[in-house]
Length: 169
Image 1 (cartoon, helix red, strand yellow):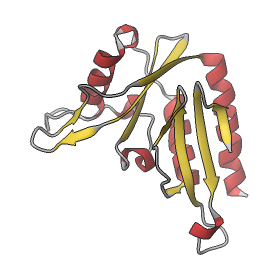
Image 2: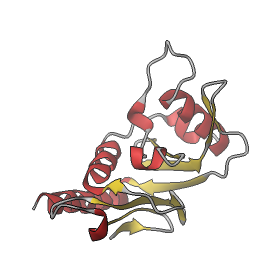
Image 3: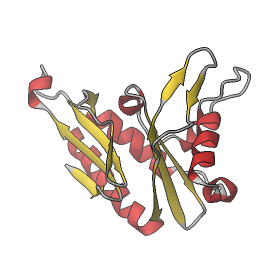
Image 4: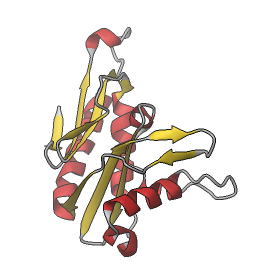
C-alpha cells in the first residue's frame, strides 16, 4: 500500500504473510518516500501497524519553528539531529521533530518534520554515526526534502488512520 505521492512524500507498507507465524501477525515491509527516495533503501522487517501509528502520531504533532523551517537544508538537518539526538548527555532529546519510526532509524535512516504553520517541511537522510563523538554525521549527507501543504498532509493522515484502523479488524 502506498499512502501519498512517492515523488513528494509517502508511507509505503505491506504485511508480508510469510514473515508472520501467527494469523494476526503484522510483520512486513515499511518505508517512507521523500522526494522519490526510499528510506530505507533495503527491505526491512517492521511491525507495520506500530510503525504506521508512530508516523501518524508524529505527523499530528509537528512542531512549529519558523526559524528552523527557513534554514538551508544542511543546517536544518544538523540542527534537527542535535535536537533529537543531542551529543550532550545533560540535554533531553526533543523527539517532536522525529518522523522516522525505529524500523527506519535502525537502518540509519532519519526523517524529520518541522512546520511554519501553513506548510510542513520534511527532511530525510541516511546517516552514519560517530561513536567517539556520540553524534550523527550530517556533513556531506545526501539530503532529501519536500514541503507539503497542511491540507495535503491531512489527507495523508486520514489514509494512515484508516490503515491503522484496518489492522485492528
